View 1 (cartoon, rainbow, N blue to C red):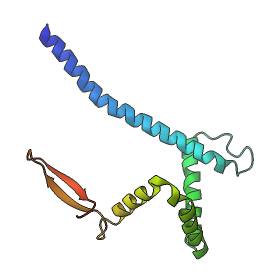
View 2 (cartoon, rainbow, N blue to C red; view 1 turned 90 degrees about the vertical axis):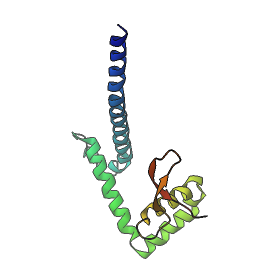
View 3 (cartoon, rainbow, N blue to C red; view 1 turned 90 degrees about the horizontal axis):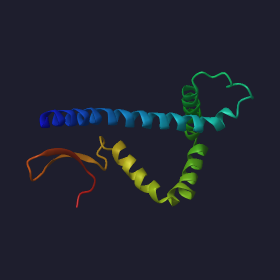
View 4 (spheres, one colour; view 1 turned 120 degrees about the vertical axis):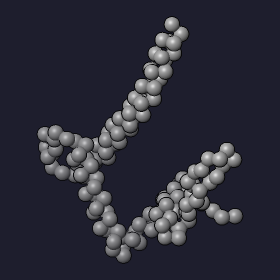
Length: 140
């Protein structure tokens, strides 16, 4: 009887450890698609009324609208006036946010990692004999 209970317990836990990451991935993707739709609504309001009333796939249309607006913003930022405006917005607004500088340096470090950037890869040998791939952020 004890073996049967142990078998049932380990089998159920094993299934849970497979099912739980899948459920979390589903929840994350559904939240991301909901966010895309919410972000696309103000863009869709720029179009005439009734343009998007019969949409079967709102998440895909929202993603397309966001990609289109991102492309247009990127196009503007390629000009000198657009770059100047972007630097001004970053200096006056974004640099005042505490998390922005940390995220910017982290993203810059990852982007430049392959070009003698801030992050270098290394192998860490731990005391128990395990090896891990790590990023060197600073040399002291």
